[in-house]
Length: 250
Image (tube, rainbow, N blue to C red; front, side):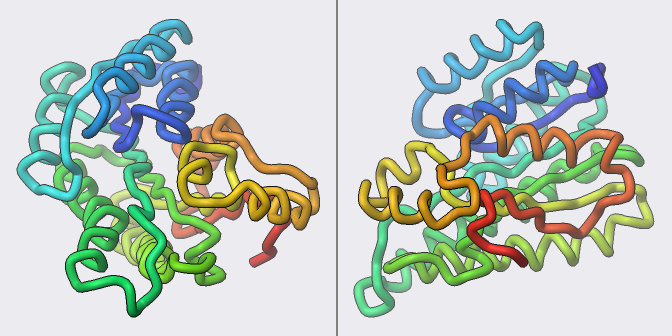
């Protein structure tokens, strides 16, 4: 119960990595605010698993690309759990579609950048005034942010590389306040993301190219997030920690 009485907001907490993060933090004692946007049933299932883990949580619908929605998310967290927020995990994001540079237009570029980068800025901007010394922010980046991603993923990869840079900048800015900021950069994780955007043969090839010869799991990513959010990682900030089974060494 190393996170007992801590309050955590998890954007994109309704499924996959976000759900695993919510359940893991709750199991460590945190009170969890589960953000969702498109699927309330998924969010309710996450809340059910949080409760089953012995935790306490609420679900809050918010489009994290909109400042007013993020402000609503934060205010609901404060209304439910008090005046402080100790952990912010920015999971919300996505590829939307695979498009080459000639296939995409300005609107598509803006949509992906807003979803993966602007959302992080807004969540930090609205949550930070309520974060005391000792708090922690963990951002979800991606291996794509290091290697440029696969075919048709240029804007997604760019946005995730920017998340890593923004993480370092925030670590410098917030370090004097004793607020740590880190990122997690997953490789091939068995989630609905890859069910949607990666062909089965590509997934098999990538898994076989890792040192461990398999895909990762959402629970393994959640374990790393919980470590970075908790007290044992107290001297780690500004890091983008790889979790890719040895596919890439940075």
